[in-house]
Length: 303
Image (tube, rainbow, N blue to C red; front, side, top):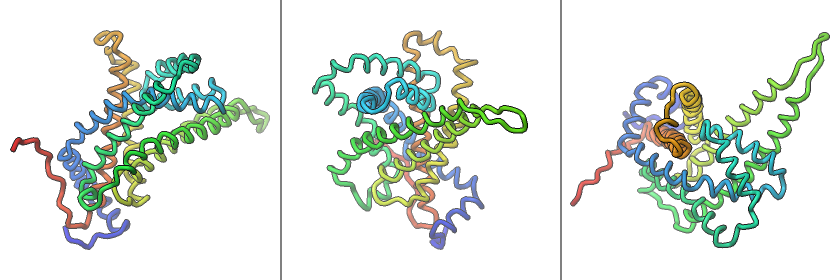
């Protein structure tokens, strides 16, 4: 491949002309970077981080939003991340919220620390996929240390906005319009708008991850490419998971009381894999028309 493909136009044209070759190149790069191993690490630390992160967010936002409405919105969109198990987590959040007076400074600091672990591991995983950027420019330690907590604050603000918008859309769904002598409920319109709000929020969050986590400055268009790719793949996977758990899965008979933890970890593993695969799409897209060598398989050989 020569060095004439520069800018978004020629790159996009190359992908459109050779979609199979680009997809195969992306999968090879993902495998060379040990993408499944990285996704497993991200999923494990996300499992440790998700409950403390949600507890801190709910406690903070419950001071300005009705807790019941907040938990309802959180449960709706947690279902996107962990299909079939969101109500279990929401119930635990409700119990903790009812006894939040027991929250001391030591427990608060502990939860704040654990809630940031997933972001730190995700940044390290991104540095493997975007190793061509890390080789050129490294991020300062202080910046890397502050990024997780900035993300926690951003997610809390995002949840606040989503809760307000979702409440308005639900209010619209209770209304109806009269036309040509017939009354039409707006419940269906409200449901579609809530779904589109979730998809838009998913793309926005993924775009912000791809913009901030990799070292160096990433173009917004490139981040959107990875975010849309990961969103489409996750939406497909999520619906398959919902159907599988509802019809074919015997996971409850196998794991018993561990079912919730296993399902959550499996969902986080798949979500992390697609998140990193979207990052690999961006990395390969950046390499189109450059002389950068493709990623080489990571080896653990002893000296």
